[in-house]
Amino acid sequence: MTHSESTMSDRAFKALDDFQIEIPSWGFANTGTRFGKFLQAAAASTLEEKFADAAEVNRLTGVTPTIALHVLWDLPNGVADVPELKRLESRFGIRAGSINPNLFQDQQYKFGSLCNPNPETRRQAVDHVLDSVEIAKATGSRDVSLWLPDGSNYPGSQSIRARIGWLEEALQAAHSALGTDQRLLVEYKPFEPAFYHTDIADWGMSSHLSQAAGPQARVLVDTGHHYSAQNIEQIVAWLLHTGLLGGFHFNDRRYADDDLTLGSIDPYQIFRIFHELQSADFEGLPHDVAFMIDQSHNIKGKIEATVQTVVTAQELWLKAAMVDREQLARHQRSCDVVAAEELFRGAFWTDVRPLAAAWRIARGLAPDPLAALREGGYVERIAIERGSRQSAVSSYA
Ligand code: RM4
Ligand code: MN
Ligand code: MN
Image (cartoon, rainbow, N blue to C red; front, top):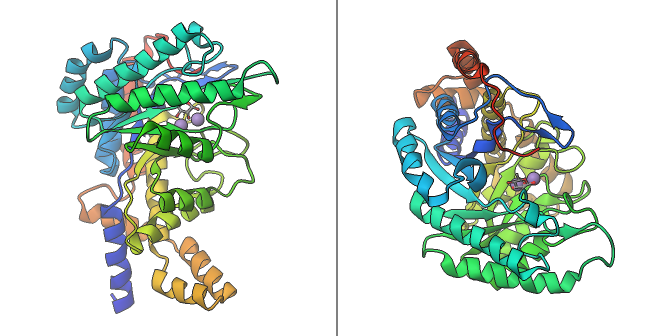
């Protein structure tokens, strides 16, 4: 190995040692579109099955020790379900990750949850968030990750400003229930399910609401929750600068909130986001960002899709680690546009897969997790075990 090759592999190993990502329980369940669901024999319908699947992904990749949970899909009895969850944690070696309230499926939320004009409905929604904070305390989860469907469909049908006030009050109430180590993550989304105005539509609104809620609130960036032309890495840079970046929901999209596999449509986008994060690390800018996946595997096999996502995330993280940031800073200072751009593009085009495979072998993992999944027979086994019952588990669509 030449000197530069060994520097490259040291850098790659360090980058991969630092990288972990949380996988969503709902990525293993049957989900669909608003037109219907296609059921898969191997889909998980119980919390136990979701933990088993998460453990298989972690066995193959070694970088997914936590699973994100949606309260009503995974812990419908609230804190009373936590002892069972603890048993699953020790049995499968997977921990509960972020706790996600469900403020979007019950009938009373037709006109909104935390922003509903009916004070009784707002109270119920706040209570659900407070229950979620309690669950997170009981599971030892740091992050309560909040996404609301709230908004309106027709101009003039709601007071946009009144709803801002209700939201501030609700988030302050949630924040004041947090333990000292916990955080409230505030997710934004431009539209859907509301199609005229959405109460938390962009990062500016999330930033304001996080600051109004309190010092432990942060913004959550879901990569699919932007208009096509938006420069997401610039939003990330601003949130790093203001200290408000709390976490990501990674996925990909071609049109809107498509929840497709990370990097499947535009891998360069994720590379550019990872570059912003790693350049903040390089410059010593403090930040604490949770990496989470938020995808819906409607067409692909669920475990296959999750493994593919994790491997893609590692590859793109590794490509971003290939940027020579000292050299890039020199090109930026001298405004050498083409040299800077070529250095940046060159990192993106580096084939990092051999480095990722070498890292896996060194860590006692299979060099190709997707191939190992196929060879291991796990999916075939659970398809036989689970396939006989097509129970309707609750999940979106
Ligand atoms: C939303 C949003 C949330 C996710 C729900 C299921 O579009 O992305 O993060 O929890 O979907
Ligand atoms: Mn999301
Ligand atoms: Mn979404």
